[in-house]
Amino acid sequence: MKSEFRTFFTIWMFITRLPSPSWVDLHPGYLMMGMSYFPIAGSVLGLMYAVVFDFVNLSLDLPSSIAASFLVSMGLYMTGCFHEDGLADSADGLGGGWSKSQILKIMTDSRVGTFGCAALGMFLLIKVQLLGALGASHWQLYDCSGAGPAIIVSQTIARLSAPYLIRTRDYIAEVGPKSPFYIFMVEAKYLVSWGRLVIATSFSLALACVMYGPIVSTVLITVVLLVAHLMGNKGDYLLGGVMGDFLGSTICVCEIAALTFISARNGIIATYLSICDEFDGQGFQLSNVYQISSIRATFHFVLLSLALKGWLTFVGPPDMYDKEENKEDKDTTSDSKDKDN
Image 1 (cartoon, one colour):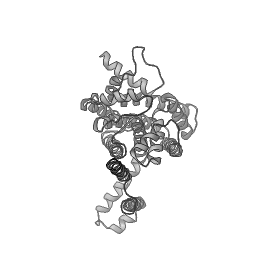
Image 2 (cartoon, rainbow, N blue to C red; image 1 turned 60 degrees about the vertical axis):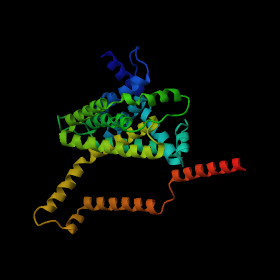
Image 3 (cartoon, rainbow, N blue to C red; image 1 turned 45 degrees about the vertical axis):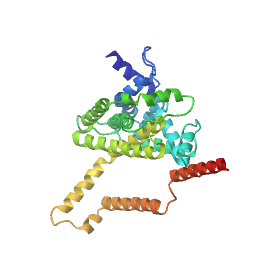
Image 4 (cartoon, rainbow, N blue to C red; image 1 turned 90 degrees about the vertical axis):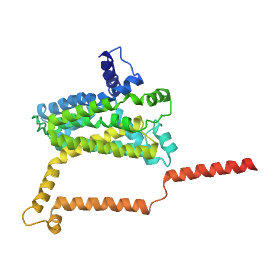
């Protein structure tokens, strides 16, 4: 039991500035095992953020957008911009790198570039706007609403992406002054077992269910895991796996995805009911469905996405790793010729 307490407080020490008991240190083994407690630590942080939001919004009678700004500021201080730093580093690497080696080199640079500043600024702006749009907290079993419940749930399920990706993807070694620490984490990856992942998922689902009911919570968990899976695919393609900064950026993306779904769930339900109404009665007619503004906007968005994907696929340049591999092949051939001569 004490080892589990040490595991939890190792995670707590890792992602917050708050002190842990003196017998806890950042041991990589306990850190990896503690990934199953990532959502629990997120729920504790989310609860503190919700208290701050309700105090500023209800007790001080300030607008929800101002309360959201205080909430986000507190989060940045409490965590030391931990995940936000990973978001900025990942944005710089993925935005400015043209090869795997170059991406990794940029990501380990302590300086923040244009891509990182832009990504961090947009993340904070969207987060504040979404929380402000959710409005005052309303606490009711299975039917919560407002920013307070949303921040607790989003802080919890977004951190589920970390143990999921560590369990399902390769953890690559990082370079730099902390490389010995991260190399041990690569070797300790197996400590994030399927059982611990199930524990993290079950806790996240149970908490979301208490707040929003079983249907919304199931869809919400599915959305977050789908986003994490897509981010994992991107990490496999660009990096050959996942690493600390990339996990931090994934948590930020999943948090925005969760808040977006929570904010838009009523609109999604209304659109779904509108489609169902068209199937009932006089029968389905595509022209009638197209007249619904929400369906029409969705159709245009999907069409734009497909067009951009087609353009990038058929008109875009060769794959950057093909270029890197071709360059390596040419260098190898050139070296062989030089040796022969």
